[in-house]
Length: 97
Image (spheres, rainbow, N blue to C red):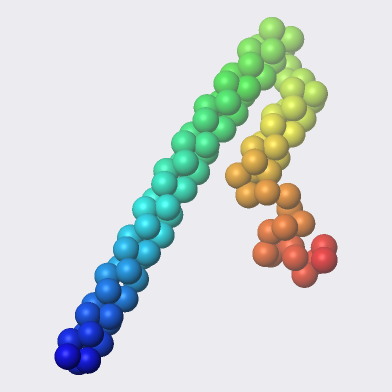
């Protein structure tokens, strides 16, 4: 009887672990899909901003430094939204803190 109980407990533990792995995989897939969506939105915004810079440059006969600076700042902000502040990146943890 105790052998059956032990086997039942092992089976329940196995099923619980499988369920937890399944939930973790689903969460990773969801996070991955969300990150892709954010990246696509950022890329679309940057492309839109790049078009505006090009149009300004066409009208003025040159490209404005301020417009390019704005594009760089937008890109840095986008990277910050995706990956968090630079000082929290594993690569820079040794440098900043």
